[in-house]
Image (cartoon, rainbow, N blue to C red; front, side, top):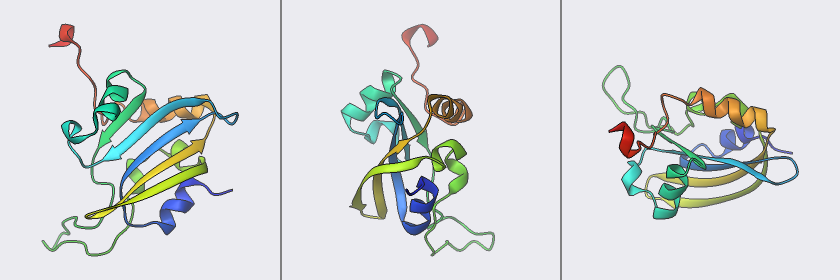
Length: 139
């Protein structure tokens, strides 16, 4: 058994990640997408899942590489920004993974097993940071 936290410790060049949270029996609970990309640059299928509330999209730097330091220089080392990802997801057991090379880093697709309550706690902790689809009534 490997936890998502342990996997990200080893794969330090991850810059974009899709997580599918599943119940221990395998049923899908919810998806999470972490990326620096603008929402409009995502694939249409991913955008539809976000619009339908099946996936939570969090835009933000997922890796320390390239981050500005206090002295004005850029960080050269790679390392995942663990504080961007809720603890409930980091403690999930990885059951499946695919990785793709990107121009700057790696895109990781991971399936984890967690309990429904842990998944809901992770969703709630991302409120305010996650992209929220506005309906016509909210304009």
